[in-house]
Image 1 (spheres, rainbow, N blue to C red):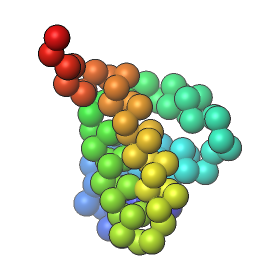
Image 2 (image 1 turned 180 degrees about the horizontal axis):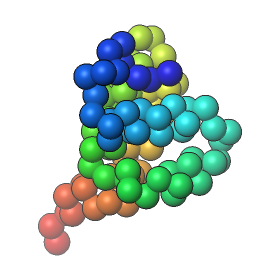
Image 3 (image 1 turned 135 degrees about the vertical axis):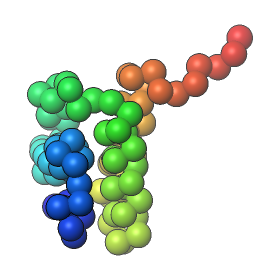
Image 4 (image 1 turned 90 degrees about the vertical axis):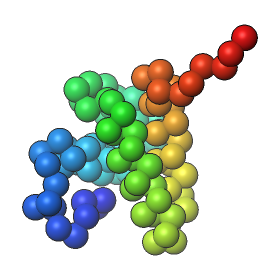
Amino acid sequence: MTTPPNPTLLDPRQTRYFGLIDRLLACPNGEEPEILNAEPDLLDAGLVQTLMQTASYFAHQDNPDAAKFLVFIARELAHQLGLYPQPQT
């Protein structure tokens, strides 16, 4: 479970982000796109930020596999959302 110790401090959207992250961590390999596509209203920069924060938490809690997985998802989502700067040509 990725929800912080005091979930009452979270707004409802953050609670939904953490729920989505929990589902991603629990889903079988390859079902991630299905999980993400089921919540299109959550696919935004806030989710990318929450994914990175959660990855950092896992990295510091000695869970590098979960951290790498979440960074991968965050990176892919950021690319799809156009959040990475485009190279100048």
